Image 1 (cartoon, one colour):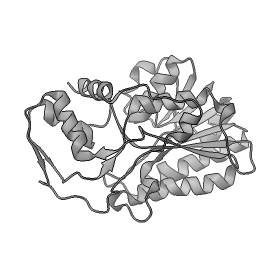
Image 2 (tube, rainbow, N blue to C red):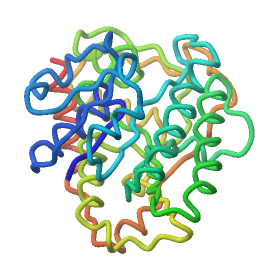
Image 3 (cartoon, one colour):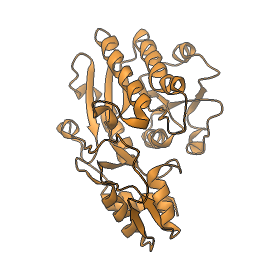
Image 4 (cartoon, rainbow, N blue to C red):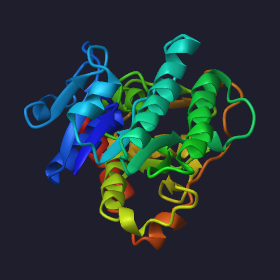
Length: 295
């Protein structure tokens, strides 16, 4: 299968590339000419790399017979990106890809969505991120309703694993634990469903093998990806400390919370399980593989 993948050089995208190349799919890496390719460097010779800032999206479809599009690119707004930049990545790019997919009769469009979309109302510092993702879903559902293209929307819970950005929460905590630094945190009482990134890539592979069995409604379906269990962030941090054998001290409540954070999120993987999906990685293995990648 020939698959065009946005966000291919990112955290999740790089694991999707690794998974699908291993399974024999032909991957078109959609990136920018200034993208840092360190995560996928070993796959550049076996994949087709297309720089979106140098190639029009129309020519992408003219030059390649694409079977599936996976949209994994995202901009959170954590680095003070402008609203326009956030909407360009999370709404404008995927909606244009979807329109071209419909025009060229590409049958499948897989969208990586966020669990924050389950929250009603503002989500603080991630507000533009969530609203832009939500806008794509709302408009995308209408566009595919009478087309030959179907959307598989994947609501992914809190991912962790190797090759994540070093300024994100879990990598920062792990690095502090490994270097025996004391860790200052908020109260960290919000509950999250922590899911290993390789598990998420595995779900995408699982679905690609069962596209004809998926029960779409009006050319759209949503699956939630997570373990189906949540725990307070503070308990997850304690497990990381235990797994690293660190002597670091944890100071909960040492820094203020950002406010308007989602109090609890947990996936309902019943839809995936109905298709026969089963989790591959235990929490212990997932944590150990993540920690080892930062040693």
